[in-house]
Length: 303
Image (cartoon, rainbow, N blue to C red; front, top):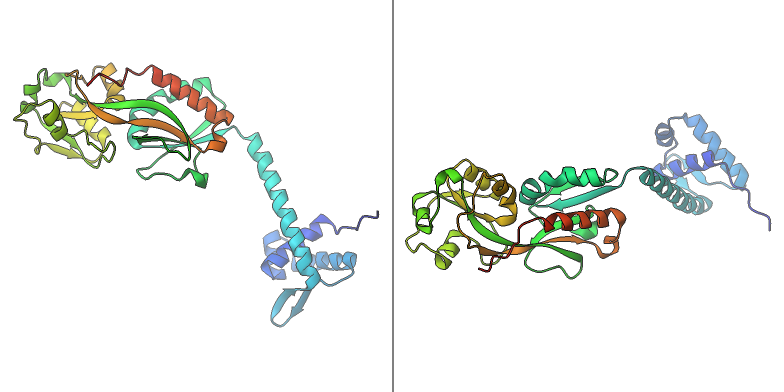
């Protein structure tokens, strides 16, 4: 079977550009050549195919029926070539893992441990993204999400990382030792907590643990837990904080947890699309963070 003779690739590229822009002049500018060179390439194609692919008149340029057939072919061909080139470039780059989570988790837990991850997996580059809005993983803009939820998401691959609790934390300088001492310090309130449903706030604490005369409506109000923790470190008051997020500050003795009791929180889950759950870089990060979480104090305290 005799193969049809194809026009040269350079001529096909010139044709494709003219067909896309419907302008010889604009095609020449885009390809950084002269309009004469573009016309020469189009004549070469028409000579090879023995038919016209464009018609030019006072109104501009339009494709002939043969030109439309050829344009459909060049669209598919150049699109496939572009995809192949992008895949080659992507394969040569180090793996890049994009992770989205909350600013509080990133600042207080993940960032202090990133050096360990990079030491173990120097070939994986991380792109870290924070958002108060839930990122739709189906859009493929991120690979992994670390979410704070009460239940897993059925449509995604879920890995339970930590079952959180909320406890009172304060600077050692405040000398908070008994529940009654809470009457003599400033209470910090963290607003806009949507999870868990039973908010771990001072009213909840008073109802469950006391003291009965605690003035829960007074104090300082924060929209961000990280800022409340930093104010607590400065000795300006006490806050009911996530035990996970306060963990490092407690280990460094910048904060203390004066009471053994706590309030229930939600759960940290690592979630991915099911078809990317076993990707090598995703698996590496999941196994690393699960291991790192094992070094975290138990989230249950029996209360």
